[in-house]
Image 1 (tube, rainbow, N blue to C red):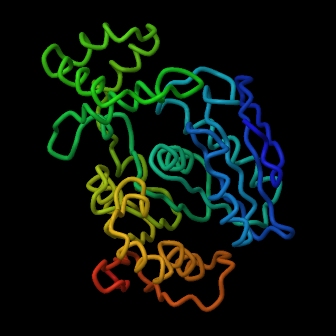
Image 2: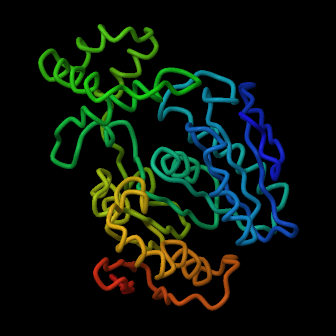
Length: 324
């Protein structure tokens, strides 16, 4: 990784001696702190960090345990609660007057949720969240999500660095083998290390997250961005229903990669011209009493314990409403 020129390194050592590495982007006068913890590499989040800096936030992006520059062993979905809470508690103690926001998408959203179980934060901004092992393994109807999981585990689940993605032919062959022989037996032919195979077995045997018990007591407002075409859409809805504090859901015609999954150029242009998801984020931050960095936003996010913003692709307009 080439170090970003506009950020400084950050190292946090956990109670068991693991060094977690990240980078901090910072405005001249920080008015808040954002933390993003990721297994996908800090350098992939530079643009996201800079967008938070423009809103007045100091932004730490950190590699999770066992990935990229952070030490320790990589075990997907196992260590994010304790590791995340320790680093966020330290950041809050250093600047107790600054509000703290946890953010991230997909696995990063899981890391944020787990962290918030053990440390007080001022808000969470989550996108297309992956809630846990079982939720990524099975769809809402209880069917195994073999294409997604085999592809993800091959690419990201096998060590500190990601591997090239399987070709379409290789992926289809592995899915066919898993359907025929079972997920565990098929994986024995994929030349995975014993620790990786153990994690693969855990993926398919771990029970679903009890959302009410895990996250229902978190006393922080949540901005939850989901996509009509995202495979975690139903899980995001269940998370919103279980959330004990204020939650604002953002819906639209995108998939897991948000706007990058909108292939109709006219729809993408309408979304951009409407201010995009970022415009709703700014309005929600302002409504919540957090720094937004943008004056005069065109969106008016309603006040209420449950509310929603939905983008209509044909008209290019946002619809904002209270839902409870």
